[in-house]
Amino acid sequence: METKTKHLTLGSPIPPKTEPLTLYSFEYCPFAQRVRLVLHAKGLKYQAVNINLKKKPEWYSSINTSEKVPALDIGDKIITESLDICNYLDKTYPTPALYSAEPEAAEKEKELIDKIGSVTSLFAKCMMNAKDKTPEEWVKDFLTTMEPFETELKLKGTKFFGGDNPGMVDYMLWPWAERAKVLDMLIGEKLPFSEDCIPTLHEWKKNMLMNTVVQAVYNGPEKCFKAIQLKYNTEDPDFDSI
Ligand SMILES: N[C@@H](CCC(=O)N[C@@H](CS)C(=O)NCC(=O)O)C(=O)O
Image (tube, rainbow, N blue to C red):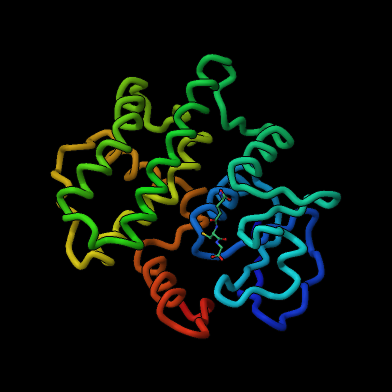
């Protein structure tokens, strides 16, 4: 389904298009991973053009003026922002549907997706400024941001937010669950989450790990940690060596 280039860098020419869908990506970017999950869930063929985020090719700003990944080239247009891309894909390729057919339930799912922003911004804060708070304080903050997800999934009583199979909420949230242990690695100790504080999400993570779509684009915390180390601590990182 996915063919991918090496991480293109300063001086790399723009590669020829090989598929109708081209995803500008970075192998370890959680936002790009959201799109890859949806592309795989829909069974779509695409070319991932990986961008070295430390030394971006000169032409990348003409693909996405913000110079961020992901960006999806659909032939006559380039779509940016992970959630907008995923919603476009869900509308254009409706099978399998990633939102509930019932409008009220779909609305609830969209509200939940909006709340993922608090999780991702806290994750970024903890990653960049781990020493600002004690591990106990970080855990308290994370539990607050994760509470709506724990409550909703418990209420639904299903394996996934999407029901028997992952849906849009599951795929939008997953990249941060996959990377959760990166925070332990950065802090240098295990964040003290007690065994039973988020039991439903704990079970959800186990179920997600067994899902073939999740497995298709899984890198795991060790590789994501190495990518962060390379990006922030080396002048000329080789992301293909991870
Ligand atoms: N809101 C954007 C966020 C995308 C984003 O922040 N991507 C990061 C990589 S994970 C990026 O491209 N950063 C630019 C850089 O590192 O120069 C989305 O949802 O697509």
